[in-house]
Amino acid sequence: MGVQQPLGAFLFQVSIVFVMFLIVSASEEHKKARGRHSSRKDHNSKMSPRLQFEITLHGLLLWASMAFLLPVGILVIRLSNREGNRRRLRIIFYVHAALQKLAVLLATAGAVMSIKNFNNSFDNSHQRLGVALYGIMWLQVLVGIFRPQRGSKRRSLWFFAHWIMGTTVSLLGVLNVFIGLQAYREKTSKSITTWNILFSVQICLIVIFYLLQEKWVYIQNQGVV
Image (cartoon, rainbow, N blue to C red; front, side):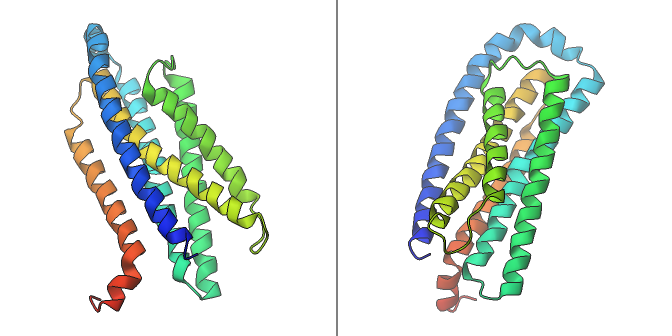
């Protein structure tokens, strides 16, 4: 456990840098895509209210799944790192599992909506990344179900695979929400400034809480709390 925590912190920081790189790359792609979509302006203005509602609902489902429930589930399970009470450990595990199951259900509903109602040409990063995330998410479910018993030789390998897939889905899910907001603005010509601000604040709060968890014992030892 002593090695896993520094390794987890290091990989988390590397992942943040990687996601920031992807965000910059995606923004450049959308700048180029803006020119390609300019000829669709008349079509966008004629978009039906029903389609606008379906696009909005799809975005909310995927935000709730990959950019809220999954990260919160990660924060919850991290509470078990320093918890010695078996009853509380069991509660933490079941809360984590419930959050992840709900996230998978919401993501699946969003995927079904996308297949049923949208034009899935897969010619943009949002759709391609979304398909990859659906696949990793369901693979993560299988990995979570078939977990080895504690103390077995395969447990460490399983833990690393489970951790890396969960972290990957959460980070790339956050990235895809930002990309999806840009796609929404291009398709509907509506402002996304408020959504971007609110979502950015939410992500900052999650990151702050994650870092506090990492240094909580140190903070307590310093007599700050």
